[in-house]
Amino acid sequence: MTMQEASEQYHIPIKILKEYESWGLCGAVKKVMGAWQYDDTDLERLSTILSLHDIGFTTDEVEAYMRLLLEQENSDGARLRMLEQRRRATLDDIHFREKQLERLDYLRHELQKKADDPAI
Image 1: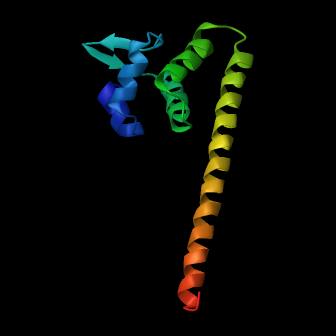
Image 2: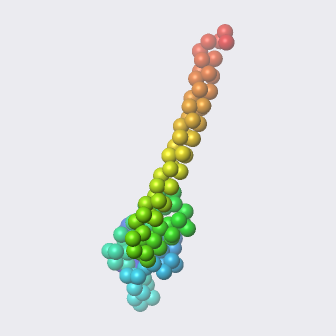
Image 3: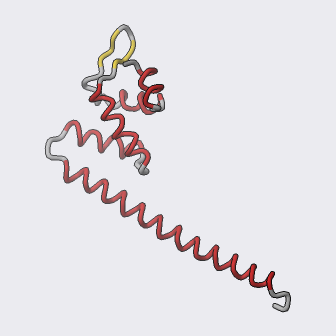
């Protein structure tokens, strides 16, 4: 499957495909007649890359994660630490957003109360 075909069939942005190739991690990707050919293993790796991007990993973090996955045996612990760190950051962001929402609701409530009681 070519880059264009993979992009269209699996809705993977060309930018992500080019990024993947630039890391030199596409061992199974072959260049045939000037076009990259992706196999099922590559598509599974690309799915992991998209998931990492979706959960907020930066490009550098995605590359580091994939290098651990593909180049280092017994890297489960290091990759798990990366995922746990992202999870903590996501939870921190959720808690911050919840506090923002509480403040927003308080201000809305105060305005609605004022609008409902003109004597205030």
